[in-house]
Image (tube, rainbow, N blue to C red; front, top):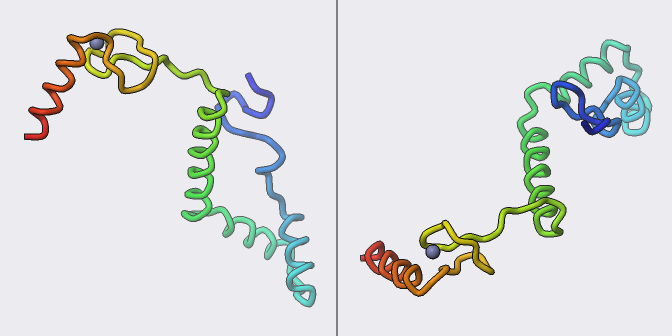
Length: 115
Ligand SMILES: [Zn+2]
């Protein structure tokens, strides 16, 4: 198991761990005149993550584009392309038929589906 994934399957890497100190640093640089309590920092931190649809959506999109990127670069093993008609025989490229019979069957399917 990857060292950044815990036994429940959650990512535990340092880059997704945010602390009260991170809030404090942000407040200090953006609003240096604010004098907030520890409790305020905690409230800001919780409010940042709780029910944050935008953040969740961004993370999900990021997971999606990581998968796409890993597929494009060959970092993930993909199943070989199969016959576009019978689906039983391995072919050279996606969308190809495996034989003349399958090509004819594919054309017939295509014609009947579009009428
Ligand atoms: Zn076939």
